[in-house]
Image 1 (tube, rainbow, N blue to C red):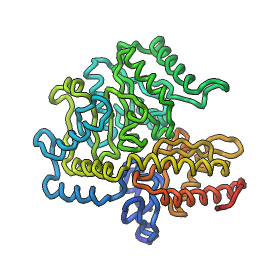
Image 2 (image 1 turned 30 degrees about the vertical axis):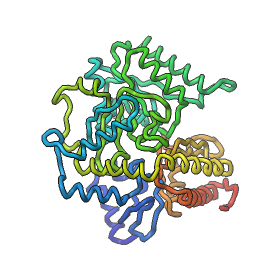
Image 3 (image 1 turned 90 degrees about the horizontal axis):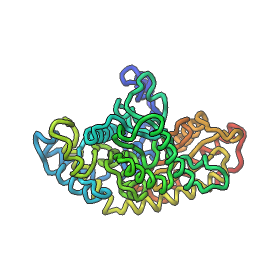
Image 4 (image 1 turned 180 degrees about the horizontal axis):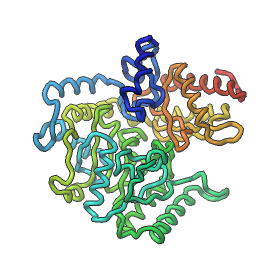
Length: 442
C-alpha cells in the first residue's frame, strides 16, 4: 500500500465516524468492475460481498452505468410529487409486474431502513394499533423505528432501547429434539410462541403487524422451513395482523427468485425492498396493495430525496439486465454449485460448523474445532487470510460467527471455484496456526 494511503487510513477516524468507518476490512480500492475490486496495492480482488448484497448485477454493469449517464443528462433531482418524471413511473409499473400477489403500489425512499420505517408507519396508520411483533435475530435497520424491531445484536440497541415492539423466537431447527421432524417442531413452536405472547404480554387487538426477514440476514443467514413462514401467514390471518416482509437483503434475485416471498410461496401485506433494486444507488420502496397504501393520506409520509430520477433510471436498467442475462436462473445454479463446494470443504475442515444456503445467499459458520462453539476471533483471521489470497467475504451472526458469501448474481462457476480455492487456502493457513490442519490444498 502506498505511503499516502497508509497515512489516510491512520487519519480516517478523525474525519469519519468510527461506528461505520472501522468496519472490516477497510480495503483501499481505486476501481470496481463486474465481480472484482481493484486495490491501491495493484491487486485484483474477487468480491464475494456485492456491497453487502447490493450490486446484484455486478459492479458498474455497462447498462446500469449508461442509464445513470443518460439520466443525469436530463434530471438530477426530483422531488417526487413536486415534479413527476418517466423513470419513477416506469419503475413502478415494472415492479408491479414482478411483486408477489397484489403488491402494486410504492412509496420510494433511499435506504432499507427507510423502507422498514415506512412499512411500520403504514401498518400502524392503517390499523390504528400501537405495537409491532418481530423475531429475535432479525435486522431491520438502525433508525429508531427500525431499531425497535431489530435484535440481531444487543449492541445496536445499547443505551437507546426503542419502544413499541415485542419479539419472539425465529425458527430454530437446531433446537429440535432427536427423533422429531424439524419442520413440524418449528411450526408447533411458532404457534406456542404466539399463544404465550398473547396470553402474557399483549393482546392481538393491540398489534398492528408482524415483521420478519424471510431469511435472517445480518442475524446469520438462517433459512427457515417453508412451512414455518406459511404458518406465520396463517397466524397473521387468524389474529387479523398485517404481515410485513423485510426483503431488503433477500430481494431482487438473491434467493433465486425475484423475492423470497416467491421462494417460500407466501404473500405478505407489506414489503420493504432496497439494496439490489438500483445496484448501489440509494433507492428503496415500501410496497403494499393500492387498497392498503391509499389509506395513507397526503402528507402523512413524505421524502425529499426518495425515488431520485437517476436512481430510478438505474433500477430500470437493473431489471433489464436481470431479465436479459437470466440472473434468477444463474443465482440458483451457481448458488447450488457454491453450496456443494462448501460442503465438501466442511467435510475436511473442522473450523466449518454449518453451511446455510439459499440461492446466492450463503452463510459459513466458523467454530472452535475443540469446543464446537462460535469462533469470532478465528473468523476474522480467516477473513484476513482470504483477503491476502485475493477474495473478499463479509461477516454476520449474533456472535460474529458467520462468514457471508454473497457474490453478484452474475458470478460464474469459474469465479466461485477460484474464490473458494483461495478460501480453502485461508482455512488451511488458519488451521495450521491453531494446530488443526488436516489436509493440504488440492
